[in-house]
Image (cartoon, rainbow, N blue to C red):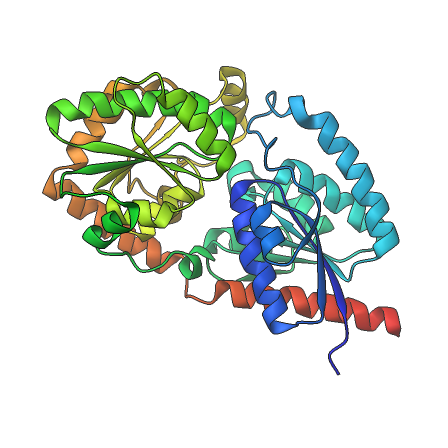
Length: 386
C-alpha cells in the first residue's frame, strides 16, 4: 500500500526554483501520495509545492550584499525550525542557496530530521571545510557534477552521482528559423542573446555593460541585434528600466531562455546555470561577472578553483572566455565576441561543449534524484512507525 509521505523542499533563487519544480513533479509522479511544502518560487508552486515563503525577490549575491536581507532570512530560519518541529517531515530537500540552507541543515540535524542536499553547496570551489560541514549534516548528498561526488566522498558524506538535471530540462536545439518565428522575429540578420542573470543586482550591474558591448560589436558585425532574456517578471521590469536609456531599445523576452538561445548566433551570459544551458544548446558565449570589490577580494582568498564559468569548471580548462570584474568591460567583451564570430574559434568552442556534455553524465538525473529523496523519506517514515 502506498502510504502518505511529507517532504519539504527549500530553494531560494530562480535557478533553485526551476530545479525544485522539476524535482517536485517527478516526486509526485513516482509517489503521488507525497505532500510537498516549503520555500521556493512560482514554478515550485505550480508544480504542487505549498509555499510557506517565496524569497526569490530578495535573493542576492555576495558576503556584504547579503546582509541587507539577512534579518529576513534569520526570521525565516527560526520560523522553519518551528515548522519542522510541528510537521515532522519525512525528509527535507535543500536546493542550492547555501547561505540559508547550510544553517537550516544544522537545525535539521539537531532535530533528527533527514536532509538531502540537491545542487549542494559548491565545496569543490570553497574547499574542504564546506564539504566537511555538509557531510556532518546531510543524510544524503545528490551530486550533479562528477568532481562534486569526489569532494563529498572524500569528506565522508553519503553521496551519489546522478548526472546534471539540465540534460533533462534543456530541449534539443530548435532550428534558428523556427525559434525566431516563435519569438516573432523576422529576417535572418545576426542575433546576440544577453542573459544578465535573475537577481536585481546582477541585472543592474551587468546589463548596461552588455548593451554597450553590443553597440561596439555592431561596428564589426553590421546588423547584429540584441535579445535580452528575462528570467521572470521582476527581472523584465528591471531590464526594461535599464534598456529605456539606450538609443535603440533591445527586444526583451521573458521566460523563454531556451528558445532565445536557439535563435541567437552569440551570447553574453552572466556566470551561473545559464552558461551550461548555452553550452548544451551550442551557443558560443562570453561569460561575464562583476561583484562588489570587497566581496570579490574575499572570494579570491577563499575560492580554490581557477575558473568561474561552469563549462570551464566541468571541462577543467577554458572552453569559453570568462571576464570578471574590470576585465568585463564593453570593449573587452566585444573583442572576444568578434573572435567567436570566426569559424575556427566557433569550432573549438563546439568541441569543448561536446566534452562538457559527456562529463555531465546521462539523462534521467531528475528521476534518479527523486528516487533517492523518496528512498530516504520512506526509510524515515518506516522508522517512525517502528
